[in-house]
Length: 416
Image 1 (tube, rainbow, N blue to C red):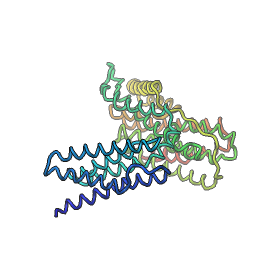
Image 2: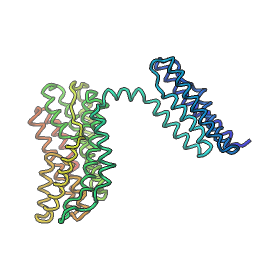
Image 3: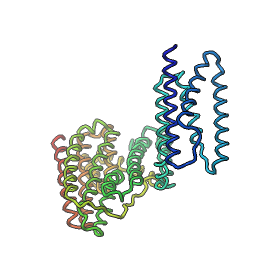
Image 4: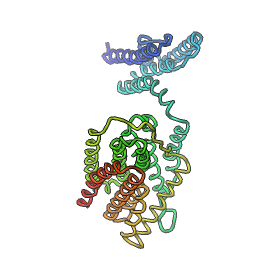
């Protein structure tokens, strides 16, 4: 007997058994009336799929007849079960249909492919409870934002011309929109993470993922909250520090995506600054009270048409100003723009400088300008904590910035 036939027959039974077992366990733990098929039924369906394909060597149309027969049986099973149960889904029947296809695949392709499909099916079948929990968290606006992100990335970006549209070569719509997509994507990831995990699960969660949205927003929000929870100064400082740590990492990711060559000089400073910062955060954590701020920190969804267009305009203007400053005023003009831009945010200036460093701007100038923007942004957040928060919180946050951003700056200056 052909060893391959024995191998695939056994494998079809195993793969079908796994899917059927998942369906059976789901029925038991959901306290539902017994659904269509279990481990044995699904094993037989997968084996039937394989044997149907194997018989094509004797009769080319056998697989078509077998597929039609399997489909009719599944439809009949669904109709019968629907009559017995008031609320009946069709997940098990579709899973059985895929199980038949998985069995049939074993004859035509290497076993790795049907095994991969089985794993995917098991994963999808097993996340029902998680999806239902997320339904309560994710809003219609969040789904609309995700759709908008896909439109921005896969519809708008490919049709934009990758060349300047003005005589001076200041505006390249394709490169500007890449920056918009990158920043929006990182921000959206942080926003969704907070929506799913919930900021009330810990100040650290809000700070860590909030830093992917806006470390400045985290600093402002948490500094205000300290007036309601003054005894949690260290906890709040941890949240602000984590957000600022993510700002450094975020800037590194943005540089790497746009200009990997420029990033090499910042890898070590970012690593040292982050490690020093996390060390201080760890010390704060070990000496802090294990309590949380009960209120949620609200973050605005980073996606809507207006926000995307505003981001694009900001990036376009920043790029144009840096180019003009480099042409007419030299390095000092670039540094001045970096300093002003860093007051509000570092994304626009970091991405603009990373892009221009590939197209004529001196890399050393770009390095120093990025460093200035990060320092300016840090000073801005320090001032916000001082004026919006309390002195005790300011001391912890200032010490974090002194250690983390200080180590980052010192290492960057040595290497540059």
